[in-house]
Image 1 (cartoon, each protein chain N blue to C red):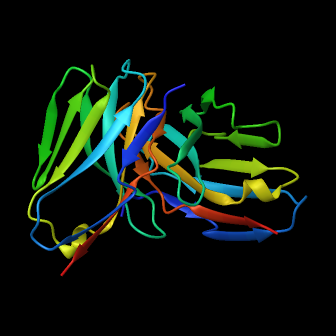
Image 2: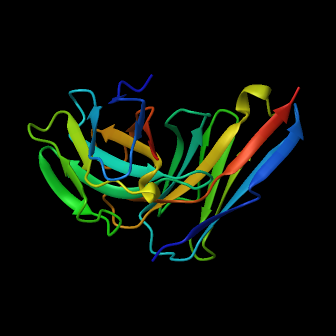
Length: 112
Length: 112
């Protein structure tokens, strides 16, 4: 158990709806990363935070995606106007330093 | 853009056999190379991290090597066990911020 939790574990939504995922790292994790993993592929980097500051965003993070980490603790990832191509596993990872990444179990999103 | 490739995509071996998983990357300007394992429906677990200045890292029955000049890394698993069955992913850190580029993984099955 890495101590990183994600909620919900599964989400089924209809195309066009908005969804929000939550990631709770442990309190010592000053860094927080979001990845997306589609079936049969490795995870793809989306964005990362150091404390509450969002320091980098991938080009994969279109305008429909937004991530926040308001108090440097938990983080949320929102997808607006979901599309079928958004169906994937969304993984969150926390860490205390540059070389640490402790992954949560992921949120599996299915867009119908 | 960094591209990470893993061959083979799947591998089945009898218990007790030693095996090697391969990872190649197109851009040798990396800060580190990491190996993870992913069990079905779960997040990733970090196995080994090799800094760009290092040649190899060992942990128990696992040994990872890195050859930056040729853009290759290998993960050697000695005396394989059924519990080693999982998908193994390698990932390159391109920026030093641990925003990782992952390969597509090798799905390993160790047959009792």
